[in-house]
Length: 293
Ligand code: NAD
Image (cartoon, rainbow, N blue to C red; front, side, top):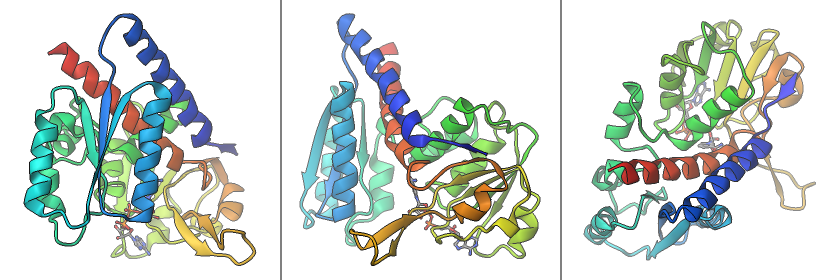
């Protein structure tokens, strides 16, 4: 069994990007500039956005934090989005979700210029992904593809079972694994909460990607020997013995399933750390595309 180490891989990717940024600076070229928009004071969102901005600084990107009050109206936020779209210095930006209830997330998403949508959530970019065109891939699925590639996990002709059909993980993952190329060329089954007899699929899977958010859902008796396991789940589970009062659990019963698997991502330290690295990679791509024009 080999661990797919997302922590180490994400550090490698950040170092590679930092080296490219150094080269850009040495050539007198403009360095990538990422902005992050945050509305309100949601603790988890502030943490995520904070670490995205810090990562930009570490690797030499320019970064801007756009912190807006919870009370901002939808029209005011749309004005801000327009401003970011028109800001020539900015290569890409993200709008941290969730937004307050009085703001229509879909409206905001549709207002983002697809060429600056480094989260890869805009329908134009989602469509480009499905059509195998150059685009910004959503960061979490992109991180999984990168792990599979760097660890040379064979995916061609394999049966991949994805559990969960969310727009940010499960659905794009099913598309990416079925695309032509490496990683890819898989035969994909996309399963979800309405799937009957899930075990029939998981027991026949060569690769299982879990993105459901149910701690330790996938057990050893649901998988075959040699399976590749990608665990996207992150759930806080109360634990009085831990100083924080909780522990983070994935969707996979790691102790049991790892004994049968050929490759497996741990939680934490697997898919999670890859997400920010891939956002940075998308921002670098955005800069390169803009400089070509
Ligand atoms: P979600 O919460 O939007 O949806 C869950 C999906 O799981 C749904 O499609 C549902 O049909 C399916 N599902 C639920 N119960 C099921 C069951 N018993 N059997 C089969 N399918 C079932 O999903 P999400 O936003 O993709 O998040 C999933 C998990 O991944 C969460 O734990 C989340 O915290 C985590 N996550 C991690 C990262 C990361 O960077 N590592 C990024 C995004 C999400």
